[in-house]
Amino acid sequence: MNTLFPEEQSQKTFIVLDGALINAPLLAYKYDDDPWFDQLYRGTRHAGAIEVSPCLIRPSGNSRFWEHQTEWGSFGVGIKTRVSAEKLIGHLRSLISVRLPNGQQSYCRFYSNKHLALLLDVFSDHEARSFSGPIFSWFSTHPTAPFDEIQLDGCGECRNRDNEGWFQLSSKHLDALSHIRETEFSRKLCQHLGLQTDGKTIDAIKRLNLQAQQYGFISEREVATFVELAWGQDEHIHSSACQRILNDGGETAYQKLTALDRQIAYGDA
Image 1 (cartoon, rainbow, N blue to C red):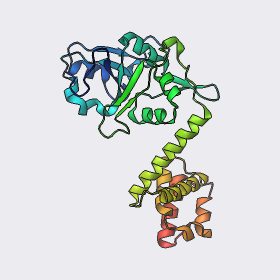
Image 2 (image 1 turned 90 degrees about the vertical axis):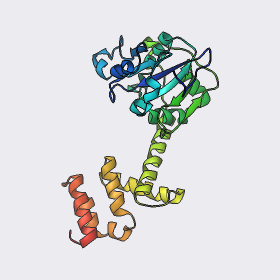
Image 3 (image 1 turned 60 degrees about the horizontal axis):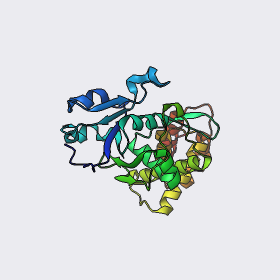
Image 4 (image 1 turned 45 degrees about the horizontal axis):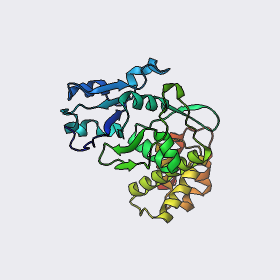
């Protein structure tokens, strides 16, 4: 029985699991003899990728599913609603992709704890209600996720799979998401370097992140390596020897970072 997230008489509790990260169909029946279960991609234009489809699960009343939250809690989000499972999954299918400012559609990983928390953080109350439709509460299934429970003030329109791509992300949304991700990445770098995570230090790390990108370092690993090498080394980084390394268009990112490390440590370009 669900004792962690008890249901009121009129509400229903569901879990959406990321089928690309965990064997959700197997897990749904591993600890439950009679769950309500369906795959979001079934019956949609994404059916060809059904093996990695997100899955909607409503454990039965005597389910053992909740007792094994550590096994699946990192791979999804929880939902509370008052509509039927069929109506709920129809709305979730409408959110498989969202529309970008340029008119293109992009997959929306709302079933990721981290991604959902970021999305809801940049939405207005009205946008959050509209996006969530019949869902009046999202909750984290992982103890270290960025949120515990987000309760909405009312519900929005319940969509269906034919409406997929109806939700429009604005440039303002994308800018806000980028800023949040950049700040979080910089905060983690501060922690990695043993620095204070105050605003001044995070801003300094952000400036180094920007420098890294200007020198052609793209991946988070490349950027993080550059920041680690460059922190507190302004004089070295702006020396002619280091600048020759950083602006060498014929070298790969790995080669440039290796040479930069050697130059800073030993003065050997």
